[in-house]
Structure formats: C-alpha cells, structure tokens
Image (cartoon, rainbow, N blue to C red):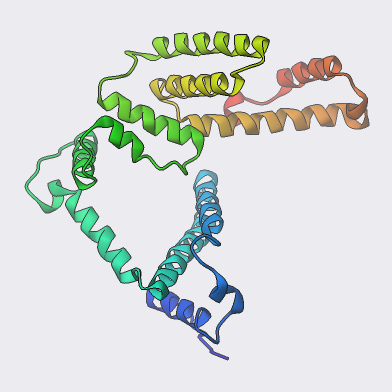
Length: 265
C-alpha cells in the first residue's frame, strides 16, 4: 500500500496520487473511466462549487474547488494516456490565452475600464476562433450550457451586431406577443413546444435588458415556491392531500400574506 500521509499537499502531490490511482495496479474504477463516463461528475462538481459561492461558505467552497480541480486533473490524465495532451499542455494553453487576451497588461493596448477590457477580450477571441460573422460567434456558444444561460449568451452576440431592443419595454411587448401565440398554439393543439420556447427566449431577453440574471431569477423563484409550499403544507397538515385545488389556492394566498420579506425568499 502506498502511504502519502502529509499535513499539507500541493499540486504535484495531486498529480502523483492520480497517477497511482490510474496505474495498471491502481483503483479498478478510476482505471475504467473515460471522458464521457465522468462528464456528469464534472458538471455536478461545478454546480456544487457555484452553490458554495451562493451560500457564502468559504470552507465549503475550498472543498468544492478541490473537487473541480480533481475533475480537471482526471480528464488530463485520461488524455495523457490516450496520447492527446497532458496537464502541462492544459496549463500552457490557459497561460498563453491569458497573456494574449490581456494586451493591456502584457502588451501596449490601452484599457482603463472593465468594459474596454471585455471589448478587447471579445475581439481577440473572435480572431483566435477565426469568427468572421456574428452568426459564427453565436455558433461558438456552448450548447451544453443551461438553456437560460445559453439563450442569454446568444442574445448578447446579437446585441454586438446592433440587433437588440432599445430598452426592456420592447422586450416585454415581445413577451406578451409570444404569450398570445402560445395560447393560440394550445387552442390549436400544435406548435406548443416551439411557441413555449419563443416565450422563454423572450423572457430571457426581458431579464437581460432589465439587468437581471435569468438563471438566478428562476432559481430564486423556485426557492420561493418551495418556501411558500412548505408554509402551506404546515398550515394544512394531513388535510393537504384531500384538499381541492381551489382550497389549496386560498391557503396559498393566505400564507403569502404571512411570509417574511420577499427579498429573503
């Protein structure tokens, strides 16, 4: 058995431990994994790190960042076994990218504001990826992103071409228009998915122009729903399962009147 008991570990130790785990005589589970099999693990670890950020728990965040780093090292080790790249290539790539995309720090480009930095970043990124049109830039948005974030980023690319509402009022008018079209689709019994997608897309546009993160807004709304439902459930007790929808709706309105400040939900 390999013993690696230390009070403090560093990045090299992590790489060494991963090599041991994935060696021919290492852990059977770790040896069997490939990029696809641990893809979901990567996603889950990133979300757990984001939750730690939202909760403001620095100790929890430290642990979750370690789990994310483990996934990076795991994928790099798999790639090294395949002869594709190794962790050194990963570090080299990101260092080169940071230097290239910060010409105001490592070059002679001027950028005095965060907005100018982002403008320079986007232009350099377009050149790197050989994006000649705004449509190509939209194609480069990762399709694996959560749908609301994906829609927001696509809309952001359109904004750079000047294809955007002047203010949130135009986006709200579009939300109403899409709502009407969804109601018509529901009556007709066809095209419901398309119209619902258009409505959600329009709602993301309204959120973006209002300066609201649609992903966070929906999470907050979901949590608020849970809080209200639990209050309603506590009020109804064992009667909840036997109550009609109308009775539950009245109880819902009752608990809404008693809930704490909305900003806390």
